[in-house]
Length: 381
Ligand code: PLP
Image (cartoon, rainbow, N blue to C red; front, side, top):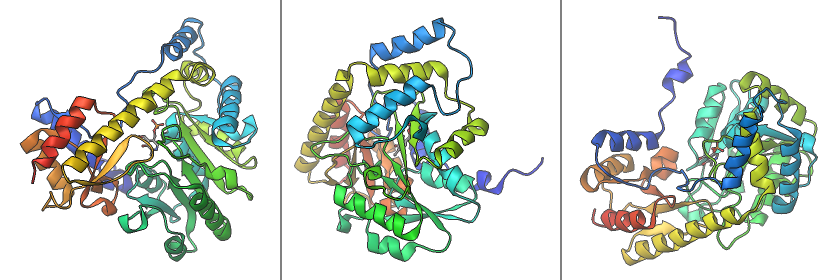
């Protein structure tokens, strides 16, 4: 057999998948708090728009960068909700936020370059950077720093190969939100070193009592690339639409890269995305309210059971401290929790070495599962 690419062979599987596979293999009805998938369905007008597009034969290739009506709707959304003022030529429609990130990595990294990524952070950053033969370098988000990036530490991590800093707020898995002042400091850091700041804002619509601040607001020198998604805001994970926002000079390069990657995003999916942005927004508010309620519930139950956690201000996760409950490495503990109590959680180390001793619970789970799941976690003492 011919050889595979060494990285493709070496790339570790997602640590969440390990728990997922074990849950499926057990054949039991487990309490699932491990998956970051909204339990909601997209609003009906969004689905109708996609159906109409199929019925009308809207099934041909479209522009690499997306259909003009969607790019225009995104420009309005960015101005109204994110305080980012850009032209439609700066918006590249992508196959979910995941592909927006791939485009951004592909246009900034070469083999051997380094990208600073959050640890704990979404595991796909390290995988995507590795696919380009570049090196992901984790920067710590630790309890003693309020789980926020520290610029003095980042300063010490910069080398001549550093090309990019990934910032994710609201954070998966932490649920933390980077305040405006700290965000501005990160932009200045990127400017100082002449590196890109790639901002993953896939949870921008989901914050609780704090404001989501987009770093592009502070971008004076064209260093910020911003990735967004329809997946979480509109419960459209399988529809696969997101977008990358770039400085004007680099947007044509991003559009060009779409050709070998995906050519263009599914046209009916783009029709759905237009309906999502231009139509009523009450479904977004309802989902946010449901997550907010479950967040309150989970925090109350964790408090009652004396289990520590990071109070989440965004996304739909809660980062739980199981150091007192888990004598073994947390990925083994997560499998034991599944085996002994039938509860599936995402072990912290699935998000980087910095997640040792912690687990991520998803608030996409139902109220009943949150109640029962936390009770069973507590019984692991
Ligand atoms: N970024 C983060 C932090 C995520 O958690 C996810 C999905 O879970 C994504 C990006 C990508 O989502 P999608 O490709 O569905 O837009």
